[in-house]
Amino acid sequence: MRTNTIYILFALLFGFTFVNAQKTEGKKGLLYFASFESSKDDLVKQNPYIIGAVKTIKWANIEKEEGVYDWSSIDQLIESWAKYGKKVVLRIQWVTSGYWKDPMSKTPTPQWVWKKGAKFAYHAPSETEIPLFWDPIYQRYALHFLSKVAGRYDNNPNVLFIDITPGAETNPFRFRTIIKKDPDFKKEFVTVVASDGRKYSEELWQATVLDWLPKASGLFKKLPTEVALNKGSLFDNNNFELFGEQAVKCGMYIGQNGLSGNRYTKNESGKVQLLSKWAKKTKIFFEMVGSTSTDVGSLKEVMDAAYRGKCSFLNVYAKDVEKATKGFPEYDKSYEEALKYGSNLLKESY
Image (cartoon, rainbow, N blue to C red; front, side):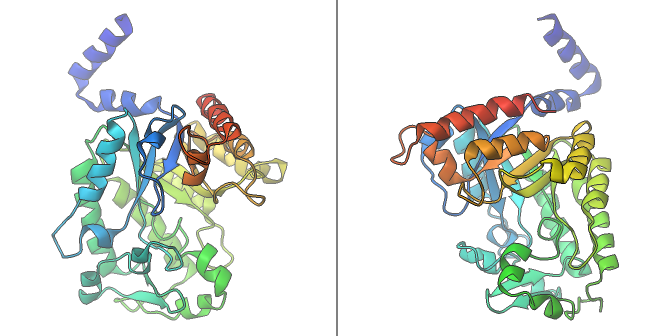
C-alpha cells in the first residue's frame, strides 16, 4: 500500500509519464498472431497464457483517400481484447509480399501516394508494389500517416507497443518470399529510380534506416515503439548490430522475426551476447518463423529458443494457440502445456 502511495505521489509531481511506464514496464508474455486467416473466436482471448494479440496494419486499408482515415478494424480488435483485460500490439507493414493470402499485400501503399509522385519497384510474379523507402515523397506521406497513428493510439492503455520497422524487417523488401522464389529480382530492384533520381545502394539503405528510426519513434511520446531486425542489406552488408544500436539509442524495443526451436544456441553465441546487452536496456520481441512443424520445431523448443534469445514477448502463430486452447476441435493438451511453460519462462527473462 505504501509503495502504491509513493507511485501516486510521483505521478502527481511529475505528470503521467511515470504511471504509463509502470503499465508497460512489467509486462511480458505470449502474444497471439491475429493474422489475416486467424480465428476471431473469443476462446483465444480467454486463454490464460496469452497476454494479447499482434495486429498488422497496412496503410492502404486505413487511408484509401488522402486525409480520410478508417480506424474501425483496429479499434474493434483492440476493444475485443480489452474486454478480457488484454492488450494489442500494432505492426505497420509498409513492405509486404503479394504471395501472402491477404489480397491487400499486393498493394500496401495507397494508390494516391503514387499519384503524388512517389516511386515503387514492381515484382510482377507476385504483383507486389514495393515502395522505395528512401523516396522523399513516400517518406513525407508515410511519416504524416504515422503521426496520425500516434495521435490516435499513443495514449491508448490497451495498446502494448507499436512496430514501425522501415522496409521489411529492415531489409529493402521481402526476401523470404520474393528472393526465395525469384533470386534474380535483386538485379531489377537496384535499377528502379526514386522520385529524386536515387537508386538502391548499401550506403543509401543504411542511411535511410538510421534516419527513419529517430524520426518515426519520436512521434510517439508514451507508446513504446519497436523495430524488427534482419540482415538489413540487399547484398553483403550485415547491419543487424548497427540498426539495433540505433533503435536502443532511440529508446525502442528490439524485435526479430523467424524464430525456430534451433535458434540462439552456441552457434549464435555472438548474437546472444548482443541480445543480452540490449535486453538490459530495452525489451526483446520475437515472432515464430511459422507454425510448429518439423522445420520450426515443437512449441516447447520454440519457447526455449525465445528464452535463450532474452525474449520478453513472443508472437505465437494462430494455429498453435488454437491447439493450446480448450474448446477448439484441434485442442492438444501438450500444446497448452507448452504455452504454460513458455509463459512462465518469459517472466523469468530479462
